[in-house]
Length: 199
Image (tube, rainbow, N blue to C red; front, side, top):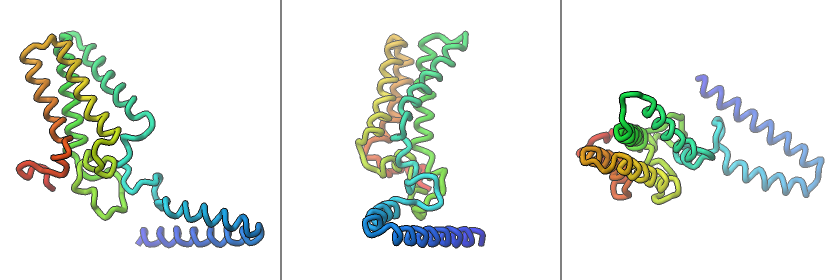
């Protein structure tokens, strides 16, 4: 009932605004009316009433936000520095832990968790999609998808170098890398192996 009242208030406010604009346009003349009608049509086409953003699903564009890539890289660096500050961890162990924690977090947040933390007017379309499947409306090979695919590979190369290609670390880091690269392949878009994470 409260939602219905809220919708009624929004409609009443919108109708009042349109009436006020119409009376201003009549006073201003025909040139102002044409300009106002063009801007009004543009606003109505892109407006998502009742939200603080213009996207139907903000998960689709969050990795394209200003500064998000830098924040992501700084987060990995901060994790690495925190692990380095633990006195009984050697440098190879810290690099392997950085790689594993990063890849495990990426797997959970991008390839396991489904839906959106926002109320979206998409009638539940995103409910069964992981964040990776929602990104850029499912379009493959966009800049943000390439960035999120390249970063684990770069981290893997750095980890392999600083662990001096030790066999145990190499096997652990390779398995960790494969766990985040395979789900990113276009062939696995929407695929649930053995029905795991289907619902």
